[in-house]
Structures are given as structure tokens and as C-alpha cells.
Length: 136
Image: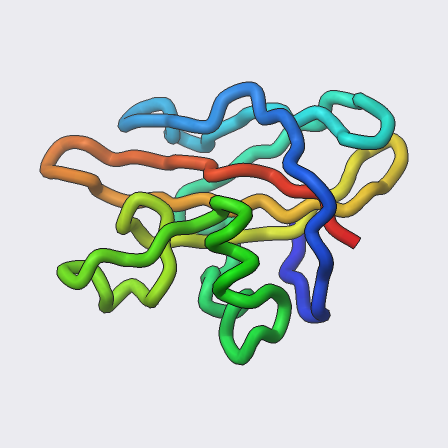
């Protein structure tokens, strides 16, 4: 898993096996698989809460990696509600939103994963992967 520092072009979303985890399903990590768009290999991703990922703000700040409209049009994020705007303009489910780059273990195609993690309501902690997209 790595941060992305250059402009990218989204190609298409990958199929993710499981994208919603609650409470103990995130301890010690949330593990799922995605299918490579090029070679159909099933790749594993593992998200460790409070350790994995980089702030989504890095992606859309000054359109450095992707623009806000690209993120919204591809349904990677939604606009943050006014009550949670302190988290940034764009989030997944009004929770702290992160991303990371990863690759296919077989053909080395590059992917970006976007997810949120936090307490949705007292006693309900949620990790939601909005998706994994192939990029160039």
C-alpha cells in the first residue's frame, strides 16, 4: 500500500468481495478481496484501522491527483454534510475518509482504494470501502 503523488486517470472499478465492516469485524483488521480488471486475479487487501491509508484531501487538493468532480462522478465519495464539514469537503458516509494505492499481484495493474472508518453512532464503528478502481 502506498500514497499516490502524481495525476492519475481512472479506468474502471474492480469487483470487491466485501466492502462493509462493523465493530469487531475491523479488529485487528478488515480483510477483503478484489478482482483485477485485466487478469481476473483475486487480490487481497487488508485495512488496519488508524494505520492504513492517507487522507482523501491529498487526492483532490488543488486537483493534484484527481479532481473533486472525478471523485464524485465515479461515486468514490460524496459531499460532506454541513454538520461534519470539519472532516473535509468530500467523505464516504460523513466519516474520516482515506485512500491508498495498491497493485495486482500477478499483472501489476495499479489500483486506488477509497474507504472510511469511524464511529457512525455510539457503539457502532463502521469501515466502509467505497471501492477499488484501476488507474493509469
